[in-house]
Image (cartoon, rainbow, N blue to C red; front, side, top):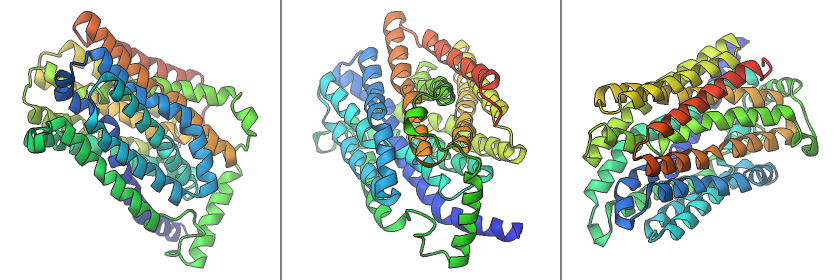
Length: 420
């Protein structure tokens, strides 16, 4: 029976995960390609590091404001229509960033991009709970979230090539072509979503009736262990706020690296934009492997807290070493690889904690709330690093701050979060 069940879940995964993975690659690339655009756009538009950091981070203000409503709306409209809407709108706005002419237009477009994308990530996390029980979910979240790493592997060289190869074509700068060409795939994937994605197990025409019943029994058994809190109690839940704080501290590391990795590589002595793109693929390539291996080990042992903490501490150590050896490209790149692998490995394991605890409307709102509060670090991290760099002329103090946040998150998840 177990072999048959494993085979059934393998079939489900082959149907769902490559598509969801591809969507997340497009989403994350559109979210952080501003880090590469910065290498040309900042000088062209005369932005300070603080202006860049604020613009990169203001995305998360829009994201924060609309995250919970978006996830609740998905439970009403269905995943297929709502995820398609998100992807098409964010692809259009991401491409529109090519028309940035001032700090004000940069802020407005980045804010609107956050509004458009709000609900995508927590929506997919919620969607996976419709298909996979808790003991299988960390691996699936890891496969989905490895899109972050692959976006880095593919996006770095691709962004560098676009900015170099298209510079001056049609009178547009390389950074303008970057936003245009990397926004269009999201629109196309959004249209594809309407025809490909199923709202639920019951709606999947590619499953037999027996397969549907088997999967539904697995999900029903899993949900008996979840809490179905009223929404009013959810927002007053100390457990949910604690998880949101842990997530905030870990996300500080994610966007400290994502938005500043090209600059950190440039600081080590690499000047060519295409070479920077190629080298930036290395840390993400290491992370793509580490996050899947860490999630598999966590699923196999059933342990979540120490796995999350260890990964966060590895990320903190990598950032410290990258800062101490910032003038040595080889050592800095190795340290950035450790940092990126550690940081990205925290997330699929972390998301096994709230999804195992919450069910029903509480799951939709709770996942969105944790994600939206945590992602405020996406505003705080790049802004603080940019402001500190303007004041000191160096990213060192900013990186130490990010490392301290990761260490605090590791301490909190071990000491305060109940064993799952």
